[in-house]
Structures are given as structure tokens and as C-alpha cells.
Length: 404
Image (cartoon, rainbow, N blue to C red; front, top):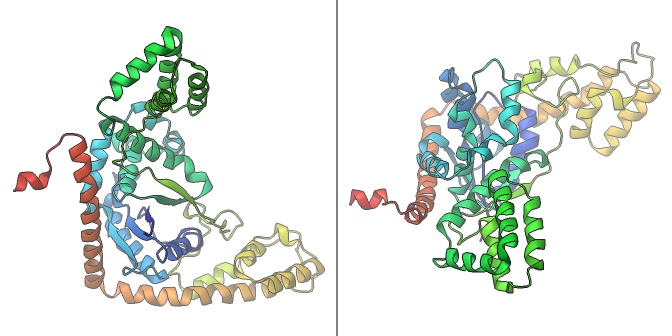
């Protein structure tokens, strides 16, 4: 069976070439090899824009339009708006019942974003609890893989830990507590105390070294059988019968898309080219891009490694074209405008069909809404299956049962 993959984007404005090369090209590949759920994370947008939500709805439709424009196919992937699938909120609420506060406070982006966005009041439960909603987004669909860059692996770890903790609390064997107590007695008071300290370090503070230390401690406990050791290690790690699937990071090769100033392309830097940008605007931006500052005059030789334009050639030009640029720049055989000309044409050629398809979908709002409605229905069906297992494990009565 195809692996289940889940990914989403916050609707915070029009997409640019950085999104296309860094995320969407990977989605295009995955939709043909996996069961994909791609969603517009409109609830997530509220975690930082709750005071100014006016543009979220429009940006959500823009996001769907641009996904379709680049080739994301609703016949091969389920596309939907997060807020149209209320199961996301229910699972986030239920996970919140068992999540230690310290786990949320140590998520890497919690303090980082508060520091970067000082102009906004982010001392809210919604911002602190966004990892719970993110985890619900993933666990609802039994996602085995979540496409992330190397710098985002740590963000996924809390979802893995919460799946593990849920399975431990609600998927344990009935006699596990008694068996654990007996095994700890056989370890003696000092050994049992060390084991409990290690459990506290791992389960409360997320200290991964505690697992390795526990393995050593248990291996040295001659009074324990192999089954005892395995049981105590599962207990410490919080592992039980799998009710929620523990997701894996699917590391993706996301090329660093350079912006017009050589930095990473980002709206916050004002150095982007939008997927639906007017061709003349693109030409103007690329023609006026800064180059190697050493090339003051046409006859001055330059260094491509110090030129933002050459960074874009690394994305858009083949080896032969790049060699032409390097040779011409270092020898002053070509000028900067000559260097930019083939780059401008390559970018325009790439974006022309995307812009045309975006115009097609933007002119058909009813069809777009129907497509989103169908995607949300498929997503709700899959999500409800997971929630039925969760409610049963937690001893809750299913809403469907009440309705009958």
C-alpha cells in the first residue's frame, strides 16, 4: 500500500518561487507515489494573526488556486481547508488533556517566534498550543511520513512523542502496571530509584540521553529477565499498542532558493518573485538585480560566487550555460545584462503556464469551492475513523453512537 503523507501551508499571502522550488515540486512528486493529504492551515494562521483575520479567507483560496496552477491534482491528492474538518480541533483538544506543559514550552519555535514577532501579543494559549493542532493534523490521517527539511525535524518530534505517549496511556496491556512493579522490586531500591529518575527525565523533559542510560541500567540488572528489560524500556519510552501512528520525518531535498538580493527568498526580505507576478514586473526585477559590486564598469572582471544573479543561474541554467556565465564574468567577456537575459527568459518560461492555470481557476470560484468541499468530505471520512479509535481508547462515547 502507498504510504500516507500529510502536509499543509498557512495562508499568509501569494506564493513565490521559493515555495515552488522548496515545497511544491516535492508535493508534485509525492502525489504520484503516496496517499497525500494537502491542507490549507487556516486555523494555524490565527495563532499569529488572530487580531487581523480579515485576509485569511481570501489567502486560503489563493493558496488552493496556486496549488492547482503548479499541477497538484485533486484526483491524486486530497486538497482541503483545515477549518472544514472539525476533527482536527477535537483531536487537538483530546491531546491537550495528556500533554505536559513543559513539552510545549520547549518547542524550538515557541520562544523564537515570540522574539521575532514582538509587535504581536503571542502570550496566548493558541500560540502555545499550536504544536497540538499540528500533531492532530498529522495523526488524524495515520501519516507515516511528513515531508520536512532538515531544519524542521525537531518540530516533528513533539508529534512523535505525543503519539507514543497516547499509545502508552491508552494502549498498555492490562497487567502491565503489576508486571512493572514486580520488575522494579527485583531491581532493588537503588535500581528502582535510578529507573524512576530516568523515566522522569525522558517523559517530562524529553531528555533522549535518559533512554540510553536506562538501557545500560537495565542491562546491568542481573535480576531481570530479557522480557522484564523490554517491558521496563517500553514503559520508560511510553510505548504501548499502536492506536495513533508515530510519524517519521521524510527528509526532502529543498534547494535554497535565492532571492533577488542573494539572501534566501522570503516575503519578509522583500526579495521575491511571485508565481502570478506580471511578466514585465519580473523582467524589471531581474534586470535591476544587484551583481558583483566589483564590476563597476562593463570591462571590469567579476566573481560569480559573489553575484546573486549567478545563484539563480544555479537553479535555472544547465552546466553549459553556467560555464558560459563563469567564463564570461571572470574575463569581462559578457556584461551583467547579457548574463541576466537567459535567466529572465527561463523564469518567464517556467511561470507562464502556471500563471495561465491560475487565471483559469481564479475565474471559476464555484468549481474551486466544490473541489474543496469534496476534498474536505474525503478528509473527514478518514479523520473520523481515527477519532473513533481515539474516543474508544479514552473511554468516550462516539458521537455517531449518541446520534443513533
